[in-house]
Length: 256
Image (cartoon, rainbow, N blue to C red; front, side):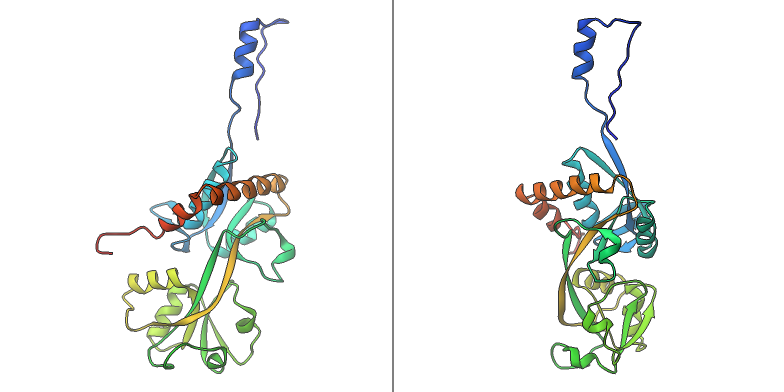
């Protein structure tokens, strides 16, 4: 909250003191955002700090409105639950689905677009997997994550729940499931990190979909911060900052 402090000395204040008072800057606003701890390179906890593309975009968007964004890390389910309850103003990286739509306030534009790639063990098909190819296969899903309706509503696709995308990829490598769906950047990062190259391969983009920062309907200042966020995202796009931040994630390391 922006506050102005008025200090008075008795009943009168000198003109010089008044001029200095009026020229004093307002105290900057700050807010705390719940950010997922295991969705790198978009949002993850590294060395006790929230990092990722979504984190940096949110930080930069709020900075345009004079708001300092701080981040507390938690599981995806924890972040969405506490945001819905009003404990946090917002959380990041939610797909806009029919069941989520009425529960939150939504910005005018998404935070980013996800390329949902199908990943499976080698030799499933010679080419890309189509929807029909997924039927009667073991399909790895993460508990609490949103999936395209074509997958979520198809009872012929056998869903096998796991706690994370990394577990789904390891299950593919071990032959416990046949295929899963996750963002291309996340998939490539996890395959490299867990030594699964050649054991899990991509089978084409199944769907592109936007993900959003979502704001709590129960937090008293959510509408205020939503307005500042919308204005900040417009500024990021107009000034080329959005593209510069996007191109920096994931950061390149030696040998890339």
